Length: 305
Image 1 (cartoon, one colour):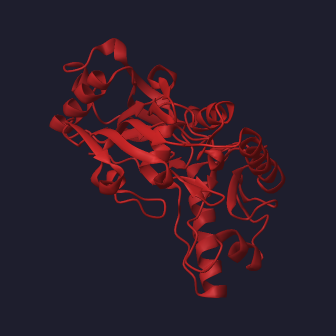
Image 2 (cartoon, rainbow, N blue to C red; image 1 turned 60 degrees about the vertical axis):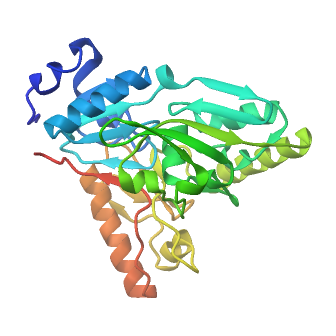
């Protein structure tokens, strides 16, 4: 149920730009989530800045959404403004070995583009179902590569909708984290510096990464990707498997039998199913190994105000 009245934003934003009570299950790769009070498709930096200012001035919570991977939204939905960075905010520009793209650009599409131009640095991104904005925000990575290795600078908006350019040295990248994430910045575009390389070697690396994903990850079921952060000195999937939790279920949420680090939607799962499964996994693993697993996936509560 929507708490904020429709006019809470329509007095500042054109009504034709806003959607009301859109189900978040249609916007997340795990296929879970109740309605968002407001949803706006990003089309320009000016429009996004205007929306951020309006929401900030009215005390309306915001959620920035790209491809919807790495996200679990409450069954009750999100009582705020969702800004969706999709195809309308996905321009790409390649000049030499410098690749600049807007936040809504597909990370996999950028990886394919880099292969076509024999540019190394994005091989790790092949198969990651994320948008560039989300990947840059959380320092996405795999197979020894990560965004911190290739980002030159990021153009953002701060919480008040003011433009900020952050060179990589000021982003504070860590394991699946960044200053932008902690400060609530909105990523608009990312400039990446790739390295000219051997086209065949780059293509082979990408193909091997894709083959590994097909063989080791449950790609035929909706999921949010690898659900837990890697604890120092351990692998989350291995700890979960050693605890005998492969195949464990709560409702229609299941620990994948193919890769225990993935929690999958067998069909019709709810956020409550997943939260129950997460709690069960955390408790059991901690009892067995003494290690507390922390979610890598962002868990979004309703945030009623």
